[in-house]
Amino acid sequence: MASVGFIGLGNMGAPMMRNLLKAGHTVRVFDLSDLARRAAADAGATAVTSAREAAQEVELVVTMLPAGAHVASVMLGEDGLFATAAPGTLFIDSSTIDVATARLVGAEAAKAGYQMIDAPVSGGVGGAEAGTLTFMVGGPDAAFERARPFLEAMGKTIVHAGGPGNGQAAKICNNMLLGISMIGTCEAFALAEKLGLEPQKLFDIASKSSGQCWSMTSYCPVPGPVPTSPANRDYKAGFAAAMMLKDLKLAVEAAGIAGAAVPLGAEAAQLYAMMVGSGDGSLDFSGVIHMLRGKA
Ligand code: NAD
Image (cartoon, rainbow, N blue to C red; front, side, top):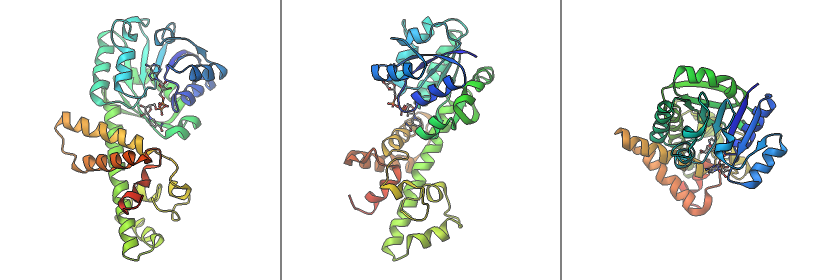
């Protein structure tokens, strides 16, 4: 069993960390929040008061932070972990961050002699608690193989997507497609209503026809056809619209840098920005159907 440092104990990080404890690892934790540190100590981790301390005398460090700036601030600079952690430490960044920062941090890790992977997740808080997350991994083969048993303690599906940053690239490409397909699904159901076509009838036909997609068959944006979809519980997330907006912004930003055209991704980002701006950011992203119907 290994000694692990874990930094970032929010909605996702806390249950992921607990799954490492469950697997028998010892874990040193740090979060800016006292409350989060205390809860982790109650769960059996050793709470310390800086990221630097959390990365001392451990075999690997997992970070689960809000955005690229947080990851860069923890890793880089004179006091950063790449200047202070023991030689041989493995770094796993599971935060969802921009591809450019993921590649920069990956390159700086290599320069400092450390192995590192970017390993963003999908599966949400439920998947983090159940240990069934999907990890999308970017980084060198050897780092991926070394990280795999630890990822297996927190997730079920683990895919190596290529070199540094490719985990983040996979995540934002998938979520951009999801954001667009949800809006398309909502438009179809909203149009059906205006045309006097019952939602269940549209579902029965489209879910078996060429319009079939995950947004329809797993997260159907109207109540009824898929009893487990957030529409049946007043659009309680689920996958919050604010998180979808974050991922769409990362996709549009990456497309700008790479010179890729993403007109529908950019439009989807605008629609989710309107939804979040109207105060509905904590609703499931399928709740965008209210806006498309022109109703609050
Ligand atoms: P969160 O805001 O609940 O947690 C982030 C934690 O990081 C907070 O506890 C905060 O105090 C801590 N933190 C911030 N800066 C820090 C620093 N410098 N040092 C130490 N701790 C610091 O966020 P979350 O929902 O747990 O998400 C974490 C990451 O996972 C994000 O990048 C998010 O996009 C991604 N993600 C979230 C979900 C989800 O459903 N919540 C799903 C997939 C991916």
